[in-house]
Image 1 (tube, rainbow, N blue to C red):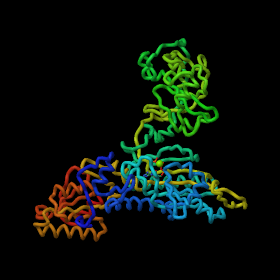
Image 2 (cartoon, protein in one colour; image 1 turned 90 degrees about the horizontal axis):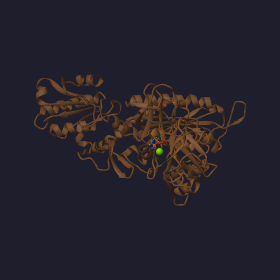
Image 3 (cartoon, rainbow, N blue to C red; image 1 turned 90 degrees about the vertical axis):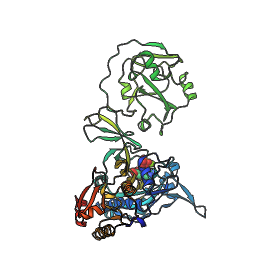
Image 4 (tube, rainbow, N blue to C red; image 1 turned 180 degrees about the vertical axis):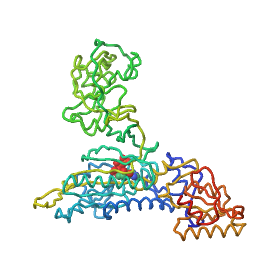
Length: 566
Ligand code: ATP
Ligand code: MG
């Protein structure tokens, strides 16, 4: 491709609303342009990268035995009604109406459509297993679209779905997909981690996410420093602490006139924060309220707490009026002693002795509090977010908190959708069975941004070879003044192109500075400079993107190709 003909509007400025580096670089490198909030056009350079990612995903899906299909993006709302998700999915689901006032949704994911597709033709167990996939534009009306195409409203997803007679066959395919995903991210050339995920309100047995590690990631992951244990913070289990020490102090009531936080009370009493507990009052499932007790230095894990049978899901905090009515005192002075709502203590809080808590009386706290002695033994559960330094739940090493970008998600959803949509299949004995299913998603467009988050420097993008928009950029210097340079550059370009090397020829006649700046910005892995002085010595200048220095090589296409395969 000749750069003079390429629609490549590179810019120096960084747009104000671009908060993260991939968003800035994709705009600056002329890869994408914004049409509306979370809605982007892909320009030629960006689309080349997107297609490369797509191709790798497609090849590995095909290799894993999945079959490509294409499902509609516009879906009759009745189908979502049937699965129960029309209301459950919430406002991310964009609804539209046709001219006959019939309701439709724009597909944010396709479990319903594919399950409907299967139920139309599935008769016998002999047709199973089957894995179908598509690579398609999805729409989710994200509450906060941001970071460019990283969290868009419209984005490209690979979504695959498998159907099985038996759960163990689903488990086999889940592993097959898991392995295919690992190959995909290895081939793309990004550093990733497979992370235990919460299977969420949808239920299901097993779910893992694939994360590209990057400081700008929106997800916090807990990873062991000594094993491959990794879990999304939502799902990371807090290890069970050792034993509770025995009570040593007597219960005492202390005045805390202005201290309404654990920090302030600990400060006043000169005690560590980890000795205090706080009460988080939430709506209960059967009873109106429930009180969660956590150590002052720990935070509630919203997902874990909402799974507790005594707690309403999703988690809802009690209002101040409700708290006053139940405790006879305002928030800031609450504690488990004499509490008249069911108390659930986090494992760590339940292991405390001689702890400090509110006295359920304005202006007072209690110290030297002990479970069983001063208040009833609580119900105990894992309610908190893990923190850095916690022991890894697999017993190996300590947890570190790192940030990740979710680029893939694999999921066993069992009979959830097949049962809801009434799918039936005959088994070998002629019995009527509900098949089980798995679903497997990859954020194809998000991968492009995630790769940039991981691979960039001051000057611009440093593409992994496998998804670079072009492999080589040829930069002639002074081609306007030197026919030798112009011809040598043209010949090199022709020979590389003929050999199937994706080559960009910068024929815009720019001076070296701006020409190299663009080459660095768009991140082409190999740069060949054709200059008069080099040619006189029979040499090109070669530089690998991201390498420190350039080197001189023989002025032949063969010498350049040798560098590409090095
Ligand atoms: P997130 O937690 O980031 O919102 P999700 O759990 O909603 O993701 P899934 O429903 O599992 O995502 O979708 C499969 C994949 O699609 C995700 O792993 C992610 O890579 C990608 N994806 C999801 N939402 C977006 C979005 N708004 N923009 C770009 N890619 C997305
Ligand atoms: Mg989401």
